[in-house]
Structure formats: structure tokens, C-alpha cells
Image (cartoon, rainbow, N blue to C red):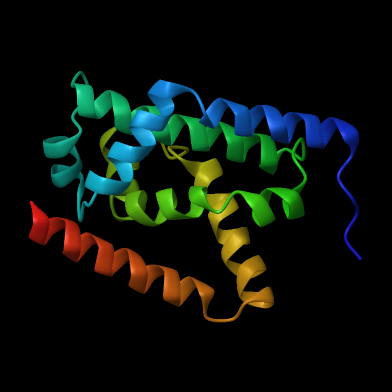
Length: 153
């Protein structure tokens, strides 16, 4: 049986959650899930280039989840509690995943979003052991949302 979260882990978990409520980060998260549909680094640079407003929103979301996942990967957050209550990071990973290898090469940073990637890989195994088919269902849902948003634009 998995251990229960410590009081310190629970407190940090609540602090991480509270940060998500910050107005600018909420704006970034809203923009990200409505607009960050990329197939390659060129797409990412077109819709969220560094130095632009949309680039700032994208990096705010990516850096927030990279930091939260770093805390998780270092054991400062309780994995079960995090996975049970914080699935959004996996959706972020799914949207950014296509550009990560190119970004790592272009910016000569093999650690770019490595904490997010590592946590997403563990989450996928964790959720599939509890709810088989969830990841495939979520990917299908995200694909439908992408089509609907593209049609509406």
C-alpha cells in the first residue's frame, strides 16, 4: 500500500494549487489549452514566439508545470496525491510533446521540460493501471477539441 502524504507534502501541494489560481497564470492556462496546437517547433514559434505576449503565456504554463513536476520528481510532493488531483500537467505534456525533441536540439538543452516528461510518463502508467483506456480517451478528446477550435477560428 502506498504511503500517505505527510503534512509538509500536503501543505506544499496546496501552495502549488494556490499558485494556479493567480490571474496571469489562469490567463496563460486558458490561452494554452485553446491555442497551443503544434506539430513542430516552427508552429510553436509562429503562435508563441519568445518575446511575444503569447510566448510569455506559453512559457508561464510550461515553466509552472515544469517546476511542479520537479517538486514531484524530487519527492517533495506526494505522487499519489499529485496524480489524483493534478491531471492538467499531462494535458500540457500531450500538447507540447511534439516539439520537445526539436526544442532540445535547437536550444542545446537536453533537459528542456525533462521533469514534465518524466512525471507524464509515470502518470500514464499510474492512471492506466487504475483506469485502463483513460489516456487513449483523453487523447481522443483533445484531438476533437483541437478540431472544434480550428473549425471555430
